[in-house]
Length: 388
Image (cartoon, rainbow, N blue to C red; front, top):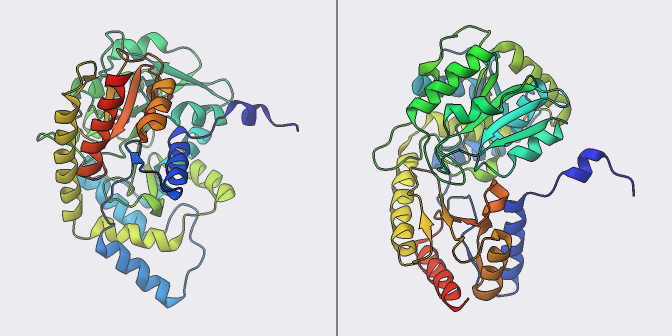
């Protein structure tokens, strides 16, 4: 069968595949512990559920504008003004089927074939393939000092005449590390001076620990006009525990947002009006669920760190936020795919191989499940590695 070059060069999502494997094993009655997921167990805010239910009961579930319903745009504008101090008009906002689609249509609107997008290593698994889907080239940038904290010099060295954009995710999936304020300021300045797009993937924006506060990237931007190439991406999936609702957004200059809306109109039209209505309620309603989730995750992180501390060969960088620990298991096995498969086969614990994020020898472990799963999962890993 003949397939396109893009189809031949794009693999399936590693994290979604692991979810399928875990579900299939559980269906067989296997005692699987899933430490590979990125989905909080908290319920969506009640306001979101009741708002969606009310619209569903009305029976008036119709097409939505390709770029989002007015009430959601208004809620996103309010969020942007509150957390970024950035004024925005409806024409600066697009609502998409999750933050992933917002990033995807932004790349489609920005890139030509063979253009380049730079992002630090380790990176979210989908970034390279999303860039490839546009026919462009991903340029992963490992920090020269081997840490999880990139430096502007690392970025500068990789920029060529084909570079169009820099893509930053902080706090970061898979490490949980929040990039230093100085780096964020420097990358904003660098992108403005070099006329590059800067896409800020802020999906874990408020899920921070130890008193850390979100970094406002707009604080460092000198260009506040419609010429700005700063793009803010966020969504309700993580902080509101609304992963299945698939509502995300981007805020950018009007020309870019219009182009993104045109593209999205031919891809999916607009996101479901039902789910957008739920997102409106989440953004404008009681925010206590976000803080409750944040506190729960911080406690779960502490439990996982304490448990991992009993593994003499594992090296852990303390996460500043998100759901994840990115653990160096190279002392046990430098092949992360082999090690992840061993743990699944031997003790039925699902992990994500570090190579999927650009670093072999590591495994991503999630602490967004129950405390029981965290403690038993790490204990199983320990027992398996001690017997290895």
